[in-house]
Picture 1 (cartoon, helix red, strand yellow):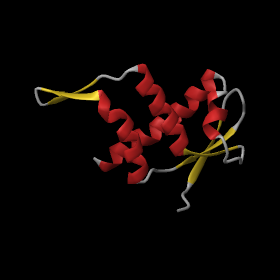
Picture 2: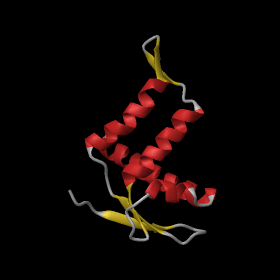
Picture 3: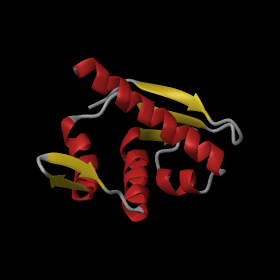
Length: 108
């Protein structure tokens, strides 16, 4: 399925990152699988307890799922992003997170 994408440019590397406009439920479930072991039910309330390894795995999966291409290239996307300056990496993850938050607001 072809989807609309948005292209952002990283601040320092000036790389053009094409990012999906939305996720399918199948893609979303891949993210949920990573985070779900981090939640505990105590007294009927869900409490998050995320360790560093889980957070890193989640960020990696965000990039793998959301990013379509970098400068037109579709290969080794995660490897490329992980080798960017941390500011560019954070810019990409923050942008992806903001799309997810906006989508959540629209469904409520």
